[in-house]
Image (cartoon, rainbow, N blue to C red):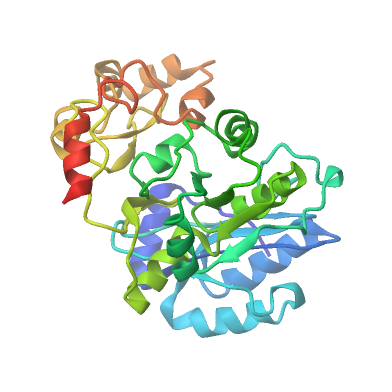
Length: 360
């Protein structure tokens, strides 16, 4: 059986419309010892393909990290078969807070074997990765973050925290998780080893590793938000708790974000008006991720600059010729970093608009 996809984007979208599934978006991770990641990867692909699961999953010797969408009619079978895998039996599944932002959260099933399920830049042999910080539920998180002796840190990247974050959190201006660990320690934590350190991320996986690392580095009172922003938002909704998260939770699927609160705390990177919708530049030689309002999207046809707008109107053959030899990976992975974006955070952001939104 073929264990990969061969359809293009248009064909994938057509197929998904034809089958007509209603999907629920799920994420989960588990650190575990997997002797043969490639064999396990093939097993999952066969299992999930039969259920029409789509999404992105990484498998490594150290475990699994999955962001997927499951047809609602197949959810029970999916869960039953997943729990039959010994190290995944009873694993917590994080269900999306808001599935309404995109027609399809994912277009195809991709399961990749990686060296690590999370690029952290750490040597796991140098510290005890099992000695993690204390997990906090939503009630415990709210109480501890009210303590003035607590330091609350967002362990996500700049383009994630820009559209939504917890009130009072430190928001490191970093591009990658690998970069964030030394940056946070040097700039925010040095000399605060005895304070309560509370960390959070999207679904919890980054904090699993970061909390163990900072305990190894001498921090005594390390805590992490269990299940990340996703579980917190769902728990607050179900239990009627005070939700301290403002704005959108950035997610790594076609939705790009899920609405947690009605606050819009970021701005269009092109005109400075309130906006929090991420998009990728339409120019195939760019694909820069940035925030764009509807007005600018209409005027610039989903492009990040006039240069890219001119490019997409060239004949396709000329576009391909101009793309030859271009290395655009920096634009893709340095998300939101471009001199073309006048109102990128930390530049000319109209702070009064942001502050008014938060106070409402």
